[in-house]
Image 1 (cartoon, rainbow, N blue to C red):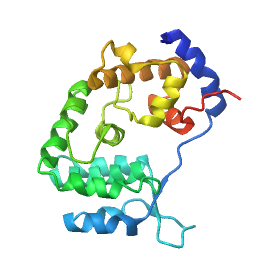
Image 2 (image 1 turned 120 degrees about the horizontal axis):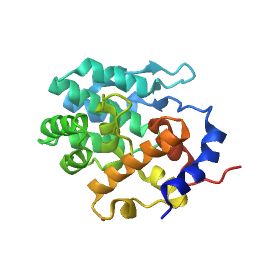
Image 3 (image 1 turned 30 degrees about the vertical axis):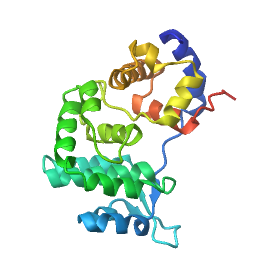
Image 4 (image 1 turned 45 degrees about the vertical axis):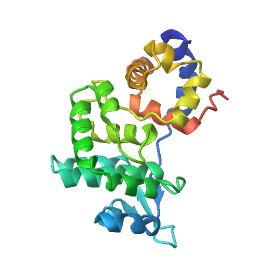
Length: 229
């Protein structure tokens, strides 16, 4: 596995090449989501974000700032947490994940929903990311999406090792660079591997003069294509 110094050296040309880029808002289609959310009384979440002025079919745009605003608004209210979760699922899916509305509906119908959202949010904010990973069990929601939930609810100061998103596209890039979460954590247990990923990303970002959130997005955007041009 690539060492800390090796990874910084491999990441540096990619960071310098893309340093000026930023994540664009995500486009979503309210009409696609509405039939799945209305039975749960959650369709009003579809008003989040702004109307896409270039769309002729009512598409909207949502970004990370919208999720942060929703987090501030929901406070400790269980229904507010549910709405934030729906917003995260919409943002995470965009127009490319056609199964996300169905999976979101399955999670909304899961009796564990309120408890899981509250306990995982509390664990994340306490810095207990390994525990949060082990606690998140809902129908239809796997790592790529529940780590988005972790990132959305983490309101700790940026100096701390805040939660980051970990999905297959991020893994594609890190693996292509020679990094292994299993080797970094010295275990196959995914909760520990997630914590090792968080620690490594913050260390690399600090060495490279960028935020860990931006570095996570870059790994997602590159999707394994890590050759510096």
